[in-house]
Length: 172
Image 1 (cartoon, rainbow, N blue to C red):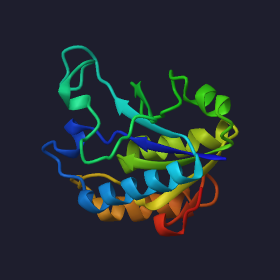
Image 2 (image 1 turned 90 degrees about the vertical axis):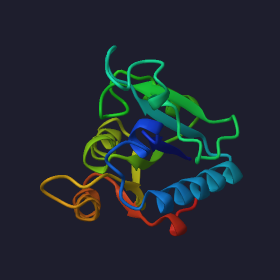
Image 3 (image 1 turned 30 degrees about the vertical axis):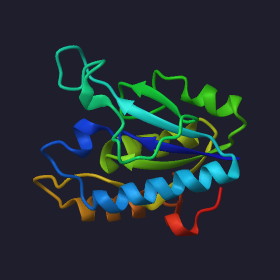
Image 4 (image 1 turned 90 degrees about the horizontal axis):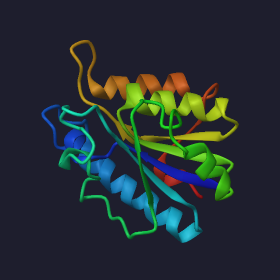
């Protein structure tokens, strides 16, 4: 069984000053993937990135709340993380194993940080990793446009670190 993992789709990142590339389409994709997961009885995990006290995303900050555009129904497991790798210093691996998940479907933000490091770590921890090709995003950087960052990471991660699948082709 595969679990759905949605990374850092929180108010401070989605609605912050650096606008994520094609975010509206991503939110629709994530809601569709959550519907598929629910229909299949697959667990859904949402990670929120938390920063140190005094930062804009300190514990309890409204900027760390999951964006209201994601249709949460109450059965999802929301957890906090402090590192780009969602497994680092969290109980995500234990939670996945406890619910019988042998694989994790990685989605969310930001492509070059949390999505990348979580895909790489999943395989190291013995989980099959699937990256939804159209299920993650980031913002433009001074060096590269977000669209190119996403395309680059899809190509780099596919194979050695994960299986790359488009959202409409994925079945839980």
